[in-house]
Amino acid sequence: MTLTRPYVRAAGPVFRVSEGAAQSLEPSGPNRMIINMGPQHPSTHGVLRLLLELDGETVVRCKPIIGYLHTGMEKTGETLTYLQGPTNVTRMDYAAPLFTELAFSLATESLLSLELPARARWIRMLVCEINRISSHLLFQATNGMDIGAVSMMLYGWREREETLRLLEKITGLRMNHNYIRPGGVAADLPDGWRDDTLVLMETISHRIEEYDDLLTGQPIWRERLEGVGVITAEECLALGVTGPILRSTGYSWDLRRHVPYLDYDQLELNVICGRYGDCFDRYAIRLNEIRESISLVRQILDRMPSGDYRVQDKKVTPPPRGRIDESMEALIHHFKIFTEGFKVPPGEVYAAVESPRGELGCYLVSDGGPKPLRMHIRAPSFWNLQTLPYMMEGRLIADAVAIISSVDPIMGEVDR
Amino acid sequence: MIAELEDSSGQAGEATAYGVPAVLDAARALVLHLRPSELTGVAKGLVSDGYLMCLDVCGVDYLAAATRPEIPPGVKPERFEVTYVFLSHSNRRRLRLRVQVPDGDATLPSLFDLFPGTEAAEREVYDLFGISFDGHPDPTRILMPEEWEGHPLRKDYGVGTVPVRFKAVPDVR
Image (cartoon, rainbow over all chains, first blue to last red; front, side, top):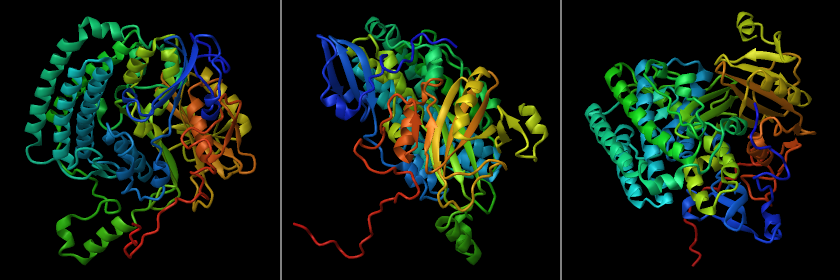
């Protein structure tokens, strides 16, 4: 493994200075300037703050400063039972909440050695792929806004709202669904889900062609993105970067294909790869991943199995609502599961899924009680943000906005 | 080596890899147990074996844990544990290191030189658990404010709930 840029401590593109010291720091040259960008900057996607050292208009060094959205969700996770856990973790990556729920549920099920019914696995794949579409549409919208293609923002938002409407119909909530739970999913698919999904996939695949016409060949769009924010596969591997950023360098790695979970090994899936590792590749990969997800959803529609949508294990599954009215035992059972929770055998496990931003992992430690001893989410955005100094080095400050946008960080997940 | 471990499943604690005790977890991933002094050597071995990516660094505080996840005999359990997750793309396997970190001397060697991406994750473990990393280029807090006192994910750090009041709070205006 050879690195194109040395990871030296003192010099290099990472501006390692504490916030306190930065206030009284003298610039290191005549044209040098230290400026602060964010955390309320509209292009920083929430509350990302950047400390930039500039030479004229060129970025020399940069340090992402995070923590403005830190709410201690991992600490909260230790006070919630395994059934309450998804309510908490779903609020981390608010653009793709179902993936965090999925990682948490897979980890819990692994500790419990639960085997899920086929329909539960396929419903999970269905809602996750719809969620991936909505997350990438959100990227197209915000990326368009950051580059200056404001009409793209309106279109992206419009289509995202339509996918969220379908998710609302399936899960009951527009965002923060708490739909994927340990043991299966919260409810079966509603009446008419198949027709709604087909209509939505038809609409989106049509609109994707419009985005392609609007943006991909447009000279201004290409000028702003091509060759900007270049990163190599070696740097991605060294920095622990996954997802579309890693794939934009031409490195084919998608957990759905290479380390399949659920039933992804039964689906036809193409891994979308770029070549140059620049902002344009990352835009094109996400656009084409929407197409790929549409194809996956159509395959899932054709092959959705029938059966239970959650595991019929009385230890983790509450009794059906109708039984509670007629059986005292069912009422006690229901009450016990929702107040005390269920006990999980001692152990520790790491489960990972391919979220729209990369490898999203959940590390869970159980001490045998009804609440996890430690619940840690490996947030892909947290690691991906470390590429910013390397991508921005030597670029103009106007490119910094395009670069942040192409990393697609979700600060709720970064800060947890 | 993993095939050998799968053959000898059920005899946890007798197998070794990279000179340290190794077991397979429920998801068939290799888990190595080590002391802080062995970390750098094992990590170097992992790089040369194709584990090119460090995916996760995560601290755990076992203070007052009812039961601990199984540790092979010969490994002394300590209060803290730091878990590293590595990924090998070529043989599509993950591998976990569980490093026992004593309470009195909560220090680990930093893996920054081998895996530069661990920089932020090690800062997070320092911030939330107070475990320091020797040789880290920027040993500062990352999620909490710089002037914060204490390390929130330690078990002796309170959750900080607001007491529920059952009577109406008097109007301050």
